[in-house]
Every structure is written in structure tokens, then in C-alpha cells.
Image 1: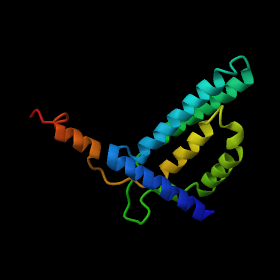
Image 2: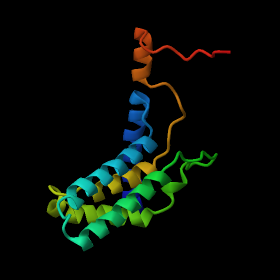
Image 3: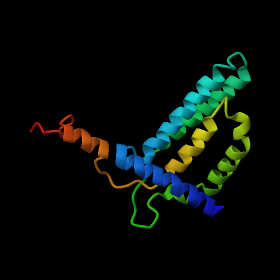
Image 4: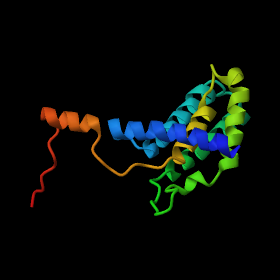
Length: 156
């Protein structure tokens, strides 16, 4: 199971590194975006549809609150000198694999209606990705070459 988790992290890391080089969006930005999409799916997918049912709305409100806490918890990983920069890679391996198995089993049943859980699993894997050192993205370099973006000048 660890091999499957490592393989999935390497795929997500490759995609996250590509988006960081091309557009300047790190894996942290992608994880936050996945949590935001999960919240929107949960609110507009379930809460609006089941508004008259008190128990369902209370449960959905709890899930949205939990997702909002997870969103606020996402931060840049502290770099270290070890081979694994992000400690999130070593944590929650069993939870990530269990979630992937649940997505594979229940995705065909739940896909057209609700995809909040799939977005949470994506965010969990983006949180486990190492971030490249900061640099200007290719889009930013292209815009600077056109003269559209000028470097900030200090007022002092």
C-alpha cells in the first residue's frame, strides 16, 4: 500500500511542480483550491437540495465547518535538510490510501451529484507534495518580456 501511496504522491508532485513552474501555483495553492471546491460542492450540491431536512442540513453544516478548518490548516511546508521536505508525506498514509479506495468504490455511484469527497482526497495528496524553491513562473516571465509587468520599485 505504501508503494501505491508513493506512486500517487509522485504523480501529484509532478503535476504540482509543473503548475508551479508554468503558472506560479504551488501545491499549497492547489490544495486550498480543492478544499474551496469541496465546500462549494457540499453547499450547493447537498445543502440547497436538502434544505427542508433538518438532520441532513446539520450534518452538511458540520462537514462544511470541518472542510473550512482543513482549508485554514493548509500552509506552506517547513523545509528541512532531509530527503523528505514535507512531513505530511510520512503522515496519514493509511488515511490517504483508505480514501482512495473509497473513491474508487463509490465514485461511479456518487459521481454525477457530489464530488466533495474526491476534492478532499485531491487536497490530501497536494498537501503531501514537496514545493519547489520560489522562482518566477514562465507566464510571469512572458508578461514581463512584453512589458506588462514591471518589477516593484521601492519608494525609499
